Image (tube, rainbow over all chains, first blue to last red; front, side, top):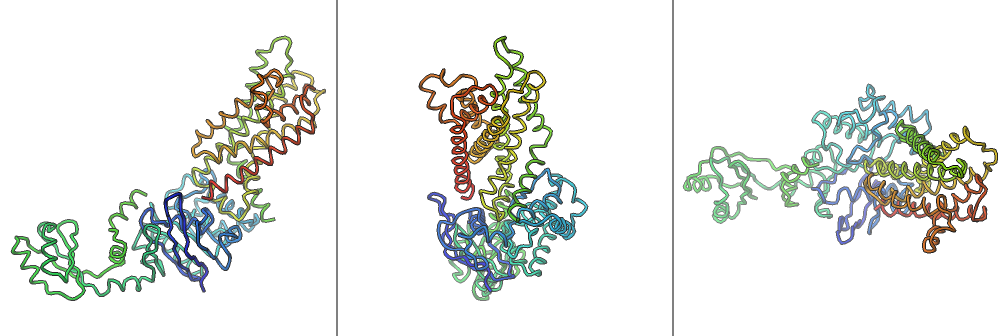
Length: 319
Length: 244
């Protein structure tokens, strides 16, 4: 059953088309990932779904409700975890959770009970009475996620859930997201991290410049590179100048020059290596290692979007 | 009931987080107190303390209410915690009411600091307290809504203060508190009639020093009109500027 349906959704800020008529749907109990670089339209899309932004066109149906006209009804069943930890610094973790629960009309006893349960679930019981501003980054992120769950929402919107936190907290949060799925919640998450999307999401949409360029399960997305053979060569010097000559001599083979004197040979059929090695040898370049590389989701992303993953990494660091 | 729980908790959170913080309590007491003392020190023989009371009360409300609301909301918007309130299943009207009520109460308390101080020095038995309270409440509501309008118009806390001062000081001098309206230059009089504080101050003047320019019902009606217009503008601006 599809619980979120988005059709031809558009958002323009003046002349800038941030979201250009995207359509997708999310099944109940599914984790759906929006993967793309900064400025791709991920946050603009989420903001329209949660009611923080008005679409310029298109439709949003959440759990059978028109989420544009009946946004206040829709907000009852959705939980939002923004990309920034926006709880109140002066208030304790417990008070923050109780306050967030009260915004959904939950009575005092019930909200205190839920707050305690969530603090326990997220391993924050010991820090319950400490001001939020004294929490570590990972703790802040966990409490922000807990705040999004305080009213027991059916659907969760997570914007960059693990950006800027340490490895251990990232691992814990990813496990938490998976456990939320096991509880039957539907999750839409945005991320910069390809491996995170690959590991957690049931389906992924690549979004670039406000458009969804490809969507599917990891297996479906991998199909586009499944029939490719990739061989990584480790050389004693760079072959940037030889790239064109190599591609002219071996037209069935695409050369991708990598960093640190290495390159990738990509072809649709298994290819003999000796002619290439001979050509390189003739040019005075020695090959130290040649190994077959299994294509990854990263390769799919690069192939489809044309955006190199190192650019995403830079954005992560900037964030 | 659900809406009331949300409304009440937003109000209580603001009171605990902002209005009951020591710096703000001291601001609420020291500001009106220092203005009162300043005026008492410079009093010449023909001016009574009681004559200064309407001005001091109006000033305390205006500055206390607009400053607090403009700064706290700009701060919450900047830290994105205000987005939590926008994401809650409550209407923008309830949200506006919950946010301004704390500032209104703060303004009302501020207004009575000079009164308490004056009570030790002069006889206040001639004051019409009913009209005073109505005037104080109406000034507090209009000032709080003005503070909210400022908060919606700016991005940074310092901008909120600058913009607040831009209308607060001219309003104080044109509302008839310090310079009677009939003594204002002809060009400034129409501006004075367009300020909510003019009518609020007139109510306080009537209640405390028994001098006024307008009918009490007219003042109340104009203040209520200002409240409706400001409330509508705040709601519309929040929807327009914060739900992009």
